[in-house]
Image 1 (tube, rainbow, N blue to C red):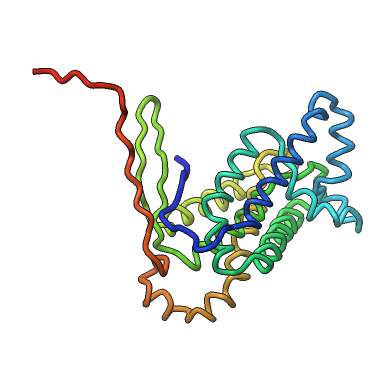
Image 2 (image 1 turned 90 degrees about the vertical axis):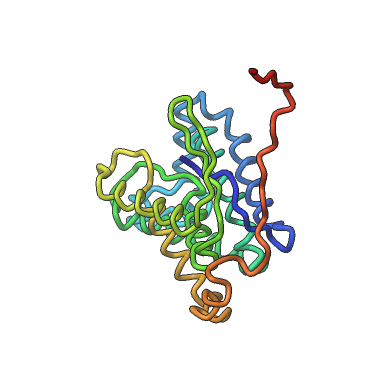
Length: 247
């Protein structure tokens, strides 16, 4: 089960979201040659990834930024870019380009610090944009809790698209990160659950001033939690393959 789009069109071109996606993809493609050389990859991660133990010892602070643009594989990159593409444009639309960029980076930094707090002595490098994107998701939840999000549900050979409110999808996602963080074994690598949870909470907190300027609960009552504009309507196009109907 994963989201594929929302029904919330943005009112302006999300230049920063597109630029962030381009930088993430560009950095990943430029680092592909290192994947076959374990030593070179290790040195690269030591320099640019976030290593909690380095931060605890008072060095490697720049990794809080650079780690946000590194990814460990194609699926890691694709998943993060999908989430950024779905939720980033609307948050950028509400915040404006410059503030949104600062918000994105600040959410990523908060996510990294959240992981450091939970594993201060870990030498496992942390990479990925998911902490910053979790912040975007937290901001989206506060601004558009009832925006419709289409999710693709796949069960063996069965698949179907459902439209559900954003608060359900994002609430479930956050709950999964929290539960995953509790059950994770420290220092073993894998998913940085606490970074995701920390970034999400940071995104909520950093979006609070904007939400309050919009009217807070009055903004929710005015829009009933939906986007303050017409929702996009998607129809699944029927196949052009001719059908032979049984009599």
